[in-house]
Length: 297
Image (cartoon, rainbow, N blue to C red):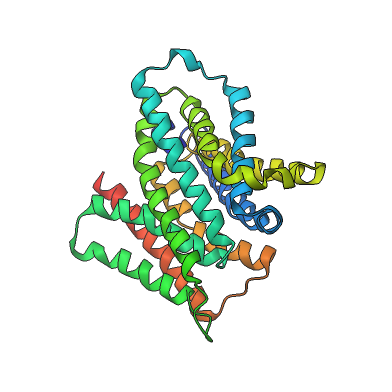
């Protein structure tokens, strides 16, 4: 959810101090829970309508809701703003399509851990080499542990490739979203990018979209659109006004663990002790890189 990080520019404690900071922590957990449990609940829609139709309808609804709220002045945008929205929107579509296709084939905890390698790589590059390379090594080791359930490899090759594509998309997203945050006011960049993402996802999702054209299907898609991305972006925007950016980044490092928890509670995907250790390594690597990045800045 780096969009609001870029848009709000970071942090420092404000207002009534500790109370606002604790509120920010709760909002962060609310955002992460919305993302991961939203992904877990998407499994039902994916099974019924496929990952691409699920992605397309979710993006369409999220884009429509945010556009009605923000009302972006489309005709007033410059060429540079359109370029920013287009590149970010294409990246968002590719990232989301790939991730939903991944969780159709591999456990949610493994998919989230692989996807986290993208932003981890971006942050690691900014830190340089040396001893800091221990963090990507730890993350890669964690992913390997997550890929084995004690009896065999759980990572379907196609699913792993989709998750890797989502990782590349997320890493690219972090770079592009900073540009969008500077080019647009407030949430206008997110609104425009979501519209572009929905258009890009249309050729993939339209073939099976009619299957979801029922009250049950549309209500399910609306719920998913609210869970990801509308609620998380709103919660993070408020959280970043109540806590330092460094604390926010470290808290968001817990996302792979929440993904594993959501997979267990919602989808019945248990984890072996070694897989739990793997999740811990990915979380530790992300927190370590985040802390190092803040120390360097």
